[in-house]
Figure 1: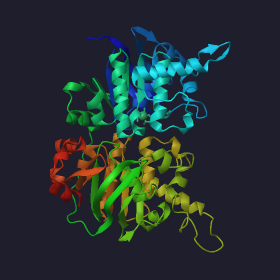
Figure 2: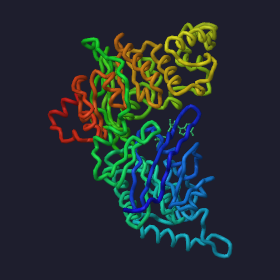
Figure 3: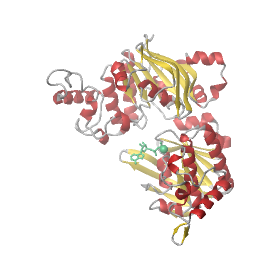
Figure 4: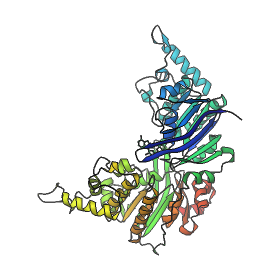
Length: 519
Ligand SMILES: Nc1ncnc2c1ncn2[C@@H]1O[C@H](COP(=O)(O)OP(=O)(O)O)[C@@H](O)[C@H]1O
Ligand SMILES: [Mg+2]
């Protein structure tokens, strides 16, 4: 039994209305690799930032090597033996690898930086941990993987015995992931304690000794990796209780309005989406399940036209979208509830009324498209529409003038949904529509999606929540490693089946079955 290098006890942190950590306990044992797992927004980065002194917890204790600590900043954490590799690198692009590694803890000779000593130190650490680097290379010219190695070296140079890596594999190619894991294993074998933040199940199973799962700011599972199954991890990560709003289905869906054929997406040489085909009909909700990072988001981006595609075709209402930009695609009949509500979904500093009328600016009654009033807004019409939608969609707000940024997550999401559905677009793409939304708002959002379908709308619903897909979808497609690996009818969409397919267990399916699933 190894002893605890770190104990976090009852850590809580809220950002305004958002509870990011709620009474989180985490024990990291010396010489082990501990995975902290959870979906986007679960609270992983917040917890790590607290451990590294970047964020102050509202309550809870941090104990490092048996001593209770109150970090005033990262320098205190570094002094206590912690090192962090951030999701977004914090390096100086114009400086060399060696300069970056020793920055802040430089070897000096007669008062100035001793370059030779710095380079020698980098070589020594590189050799010891198997981190391939050139000490003299300029950081700005390095690949993401090489930059990450610089960050790791930087932590090691300061003698970090507890190494925190926040989603380190997101920027790596599969080969780089393998070498990173070899480095981490070597560090742990040498007595270091490693925390690896990830949402990828196969990584957890491949590298960690222990796992703590977070969901909605709380710990929902603790496992020794050797005893964990992928199904249990998926369940802990996604199993939020969603109350059924009831989805009786309306009988036969109508004609195909969205058609994706043999779609392929590549990002910086990495295949994100491979040979994906599916269609969505009027009066149908097609769910897309998958652990985040398995290509779902890229499929959505391809349909919207925000990211380029490599191969395949996408048709909306029979029209090939290839030559159309985002705005034209939307004008053709695409409503969108984006995953990133605060970034893409709303303009947080603008009023609720302005947000609700986004996209209505060129058409009456709010905007005049022709004549001398072109370009002016009818503010009274804007206000009236806002008031009607706020009432219809039960947006809890003190009024239409309040900036959307001041609303709770659930109410801001109702604003997005109200606006998107008010365009009468035939197709709706909704990505994680209830992520970070309170239970009451979830039910109301679900009911809206069902009503839209029942009125003939076609919905592509991407969700990490199995329960949400079961509550809403008429069919569920499961994505894993960029492909659709399974498809289930509503009746067959059991948690066990979807969970297994999400974890990649359906890969052994026969080719014939796969073809069928993908068509
Ligand atoms: N600085 C911040 N200000 C406001 N909200 C934040 C801040 N940092 C995180 N959050 C919110 O806290 C929740 C948890 O976020 P985070 O810890 O980044 O999760 P994860 O790393 O698991 O994706 C999210 O809802 C996020 O929007
Ligand atoms: Mg994070």
